Each structure stands twice: as structure tokens, then as C-alpha cells.
Image (cartoon, rainbow, N blue to C red; front, side, top):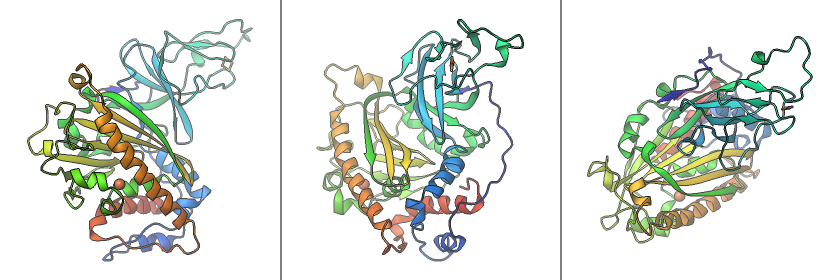
Length: 399
Ligand code: FES
Ligand code: FE
């Protein structure tokens, strides 16, 4: 956690109303002693529930807004949708990554379109009337503006958003009242440290749109019970019943799985064309870590690359996913390096998973849906669903 937007201290946190879902149905999800069950149908289909989740989960959590490592140069910036809002991430002259609400202080035009590539410029220009801000968000020019006598430029700087850089990721908290990021992540930072994702570089990036609620790809990610049925390629390189899940502090759920004896990594032939990350122990170099940081980052740490899924709800039944593959610079700089060995494997696997998620979405949208039980091997799905259900009931994030 090496950078903090200096303009944005944490604000006191208040409890909010619970989610618009029947309490008894949520209580059934959390029933002690049982194997628990899936969330009620409305959690996957209802506009009001998604509106609540955007406000309570995506605005009030630490949300991953993508890599910050690709905003290395002073003036580099990117606009990102986060929950109900839009963030403008900007690298300052002083090396600090800042986030601002992506809104001009004149008449509210967005400063940069979301979803486009990063650009680098010396100042922030509004495209509407060309008001100009410096990289720290201070208003520096108002061309041709016939200012009223009371106008004071220093009153009209960009509104800062809380942001921290964590291991090469930009983590934002639009509401400003999430716990400190170190507390939020709990034990995960130390668990992930040997992979050193802050050193790694994005070599490939895919976008997907799923016709499924945003929680379904996360639930799917948290178990490999389905692997034998839908992932023949994966089962060759990683036994689907291997590994264990963690029960450690923090707003995350996940575990590790072993590689098959013949496999160096997760690829179609099990071979790596990269380099083993130098911080890993011999045991870590034989495993893959699969962790979901609530609410929107899935992080899969392999011996030779890290893959991320960044998840954003579009509607209750549609989800955007950005999948990125990060490699050691030493691998990328090798002549002829091609990340396809990892990308092709996971693109096939991703699409198999998305088909499954869309099948579940069609099922939970049916009047015939009844929330079903979790098997013991689906304990991490249960952990995730319990985190969601507890937070629905509490009107706050509850790990
Ligand atoms: Fe930005 Fe007018 S709205 S300069
Ligand atoms: Fe899968």
C-alpha cells in the first residue's frame, strides 16, 4: 500500500438499510448446522437488489479499478466505472496515483469516456468548454469564461475519490468510508506476497459480456465440483478435487489447487513458456491460488503468471468481465515470448464457465427455482454466499 490519495481521508461509517429481500429467506441461507443454500432468486434477477448492491457493495467496498502499473508516467489516466459512479485515475507529477470523480466542476461534463485505453497528457482538459485542471485536480484555466465577480478558481478543483495502490492494482472506495485497505484485505496481502503481482506486466487482456448476474461467475469460481463435467482441458493439468480453501481474516474467499505431476502450469499441454516467479517456494510453484476479493476481483496466481477477472454488473442479468494475464517482465522480454499458452487455456475455460453461469441464470429466473444445498466441496461458494447474505441483512459489509 504505497500510495494514498492525500485529499481523501476515510469518513465515519454508518449502517444502512438491509437489502430489499425477505429476511426469512436470507435467514434460511445462513441457517446454522445445515449445509446452507443458494441465495433467493431475486438476488440474481431484481433491479432493486442490484441498486442496493451497487450502493452498499460497490460504492462502500474497496473495488478494483484495474491495474495501476499501466499508469506509470506522470499524466497517465484512465476513466473507470465503479458502482454507481465513474472514477478518473491520474498519475501525478509527484508519482502519486490519484482518483477523482470523473466530473467537470463547470457544468458537469464527464472528463474522459470510460472504457477506453489509457492516455497521457500534462493536464486534465474538459472536452466541453475546455476548463483545465492540473494533475492534482486543481482548476488552472477557464478559457474565455466570463467569470462572475464571486468566482474563485480555488473553489472548483476536482472532487477526489479515495484510492490506494495495492500490488499494482488501483483500489478505490467511492463512499470514502471503507475500513483501511490493509484491514479489508486481512491475511490475503501476505498470502499473495510471494507472487509479487506489483512487478508483473499485463501481456493480454480479454473482455466478456455474460448474460448472468455478477455473483454467478464468482460462485462458479469458488468451486471445482463442476470441473469434471465442463472442463476436460483443466482436469488434465489440475486434479479437480485437489486443494483446500482458506478461512483467514479479510473480505475475500478462496483456496489453492495442485497441479498434476506432469504439469508446470495451467496450459493446454501443461507446459510453461514463461518463467517461474522468483519469490515462490517449491510448494507454491506446484499450486495455483484462486481468490476472490470482494466484490469484483478474482485473482488466480499460477507459478508463472497471474490472471485476474475484474467483474462489473451491467444489469441484474448481465455482467462485464475483463480478464488479464500478467507475466514477469523477464518472460515478456524474451525473444518470441507469446502469452497464448496461458491465454488460450483460460479463454477456453472462461467460455465453458460463462456457459454454465448463463445456464444457472436461466434457472434462477424460473418460477421452478428453489435455492439448493451446497456440498462439502462447495464450502468456498458457501463462504461467499454467507458473506453476501450477512451483508444483505446487516446493511453493511460483513466478512
Ligand atoms: Fe467542463 Fe464546461 S462542463 S468546461
Ligand atoms: Fe470453472
